[in-house]
Every structure is written in C-alpha cells, then in structure tokens.
Length: 156
Image 1: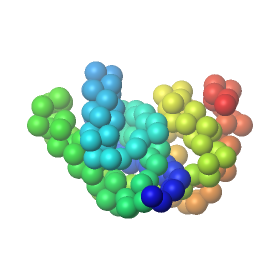
Image 2: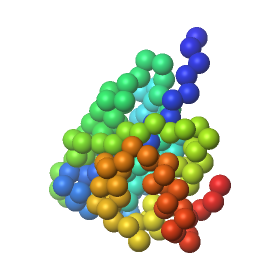
Image 3: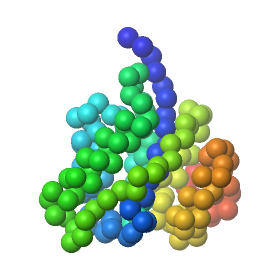
Image 4: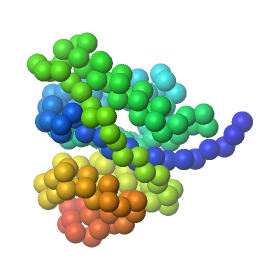
C-alpha cells in the first residue's frame, strides 16, 4: 500500500462572492461536507467558512486528484443545500478555486488560520485575501504575515 502525505489547502467562494452562508447554514454545511467526504474517501483535516467562502485542508489519497476532489466537494454540497432548500435562493460555489500544497511543518499554522476565519476577516476582506493568494504561490509567507499582523491570530 502506498504511503502518501499530501496536504492541500483549498479555498473557494460562493458564486459572485455572495453572502449565502448564514450562521444557521454554516454548521449544517460544514457537517455535511465532512460527512459526505468521509463517504467518498476524502480526508478533510480541517475546514471552516464565512458567509462567502470556505477553506479546507484535505489530505489527498494516492488516487485522488485536486480537481476531482474539489469537484466532488463543491458539486455535492451545493446540490445538497439546494435539494433541502436550506436557503431561499439558489446556492452555488464559484467555478474557480485555489489549491496550494502545505508543507507538513506548517500544517498547524494553516489549521489555526482556518479556525480563526471570522476574526481574520474583520481586518482583511476575502477579496483582498483572494488577490494575495492568486498573486503568490508562497501561501506559507501569506499566513506568516497574517500571523505577524494579527494580535488575535492563534498560535500553535
């Protein structure tokens, strides 16, 4: 059996970055994504969302691809929200996503960053963060800067 340890930090937003994820929907959505991923053999290390986007750390299996994993999580979760009419409008994720590998020595920094999304976005909007991620492949540098500049950033 292969031994694989590949961690991917996924980020994607709701369609047009619309604020669709309410406080009531959030725990249901996160729980469903986690449970459905287990059923599909996708290991989610951690996840969290705000009203307009989601962060996940996924440990890819030896036969999983980034695009297939994102497609399975995004497609099924939006289908589920709409099927159960959990919001008044149609729920959709944006087609685009960010997927960056994580150095295992930095995994706790990323986990803490994801856990602290609400506090983090009081200081920086998702649009600002998204632009930084898109301009740089140095995700660990971005997270380190966030940690340095944010008094509320949890430490490992």
